[in-house]
Every structure is written in C-alpha cells, then in structure tokens.
Amino acid sequence: MKTAINVDGKEIVFVRNWITGSFTYSIDGKKRNLASVLNPLTHYSIQLSRTYKAQVGETIVTIVKTRPLMFAGFRQNNYKFFIDNKLIKEVDAL
Image (cartoon, rainbow, N blue to C red; front, side, top):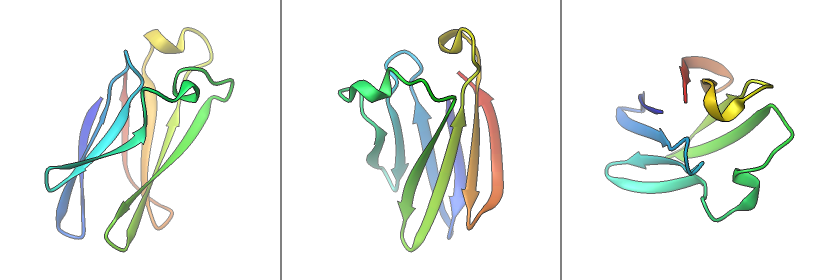
C-alpha cells in the first residue's frame, strides 16, 4: 500500500509492505517507521484493528488499520487517516 496525504502544505507518503509488515512514512524525503520488521508484534496479532500515530510538525495523523478476520495476509486491509478526529482519507489495499 502506498498513499499520500497533505498536512500543513507538506506531502506525507505512507508505505506499507504487506510481505514484511513494515509501515513507514516520509516527510521531505526523511523516512520514519510506524511498524518495524524486527518487532514480532508487527507480524502476529489477534486484534483486527491497530492504531498508528505519525507526528507531522505540530499535527498528529492517526492511522487506523483494520484487517479482515479470515486470510488477512491475502486480503485487502482498510486504512483510515484522521487529523483531529476528522477522517481525511480511506484506502483499501494489501
């Protein structure tokens, strides 16, 4: 999954690799991790929903990833992007 949003005039690019489970975002070419490949909790979870927070200057972007119950690794996940509890983007992707 690769998607971009605009926050305070800056383009933020979010990338999640469905094979490794890594989840990163880039601001002005600087990459930051939301979920590391080295963390075992990135790969195994019993919860269907996980929340991530990305700091962009003074603004906090909240990302809620919801996975399907069955065969989650092979089906699309739902990603919702919030700023100040306001939904700004929704993406369905692997």
